[in-house]
Amino acid sequence: MSNPQQAARATSPAGKARTWPWIAGSAVALVLLGCGSASSSDDAAGTSGDAAAVTEEKTESAKTGDKKEEKKAAGIGDAVRDGKFEFTVSKMKCGVENVGSDLLGQKAQGEYCLIDIKVKNIGKEAQTFTDSAQKAFDAKEVEYSVDSSAAIYANGESQLLLSEINPGNSAKGKLVFDVPAGTKLTSLELHDSVFSGGVTVTLK
Image (cartoon, one colour):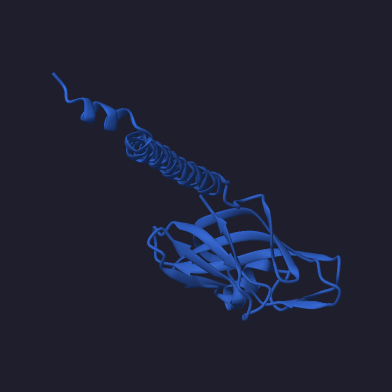
């Protein structure tokens, strides 16, 4: 049988007072644990969301880069610009052994590649076209310079060499490259002057 005094103490206000702090403390602990779990879940969700956003951003960047690479490079027939000049290459003919006539002409060391080009002044003042500022390249990126003396015979009356072109006007002519026999030129680098950055035209 229980002791009447112990029973009395358990049911007394003092006993209840000692029990309530323990219950309240347990409840607070449970609430804190619940908050901590929710916070951890939110952090995990936030981290996952951030990672997904970064992945999506990288994917979009990759797609944008692919689109830039897919953009068609300027080629024969396309108008391109560098500085005050707009260039349009119309055709290329290689395997030419000599230019000019039998009396006035020049023979190639290897063979000539003749490139027909139109040059338009898009600036606001006269600009001189210098054929020696132009460059050609093959598939191995070997650089070739213009043969200006051969260009004199190849162009005849339509001289492009050192032509001064007024704003809005155009001049047509041939760029002449003396290259080893069998060489296939793949691109041109066209400049409005020897100091300009240049623009590339593919010849494929």
